[in-house]
Image (cartoon, rainbow, N blue to C red; front, side):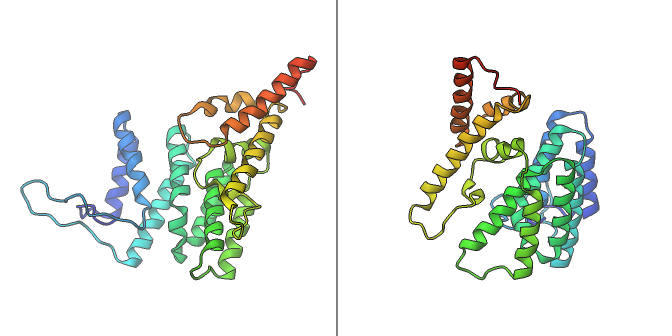
Length: 266
């Protein structure tokens, strides 16, 4: 939004993104998807890279006012939400992750909160938005432990209501949220996290590891579930509770072999 080195209007930037995403060139699409992640940035802008290029002197580019910034963010939210609800699996996955990644900083802008809630509900209605659930949990968690000014009662009520709607309710959703999702800051989804406990993070890890183990035991009992998630278990990304989940799977498998039972059916 700022320090772009260009004075392109909002409409021009949206048109450029749409044009690039419609190309058959995979490299161009990847570049555009990386740009999508920046369209919803509201903080931590950097001027480390120079905007000087070509024969003419240039400045840091267009700098919208606060009111204009809100309009831009609303437009980019609509654009990214469209990708998140689309049919292209790659674009859909990136867009849903971007919305979750930027949710916390966007939530700080009061003018966007109703739209964010609407977006969250819309995404969750199509496919459970577990990334968004974790983002909402993170906001609530850090507000609870913050020593700074707390959010208002109305704001917390709105967030808690959305959190309840996005919370995974089936076994596959719980596995994806804890075992297959982003492995950072998982303590924010620990319902028993005690801020006053000196060993709070160690105890939280133990509880979540135990829960992952139980999810592994339960997974093998739901027909077809392991087949749906097997590929994701080996993706090269940080997942601190995959081993505990695997031990749960292995225990049930060994038990079924020992007693000659079939544990993959209800």
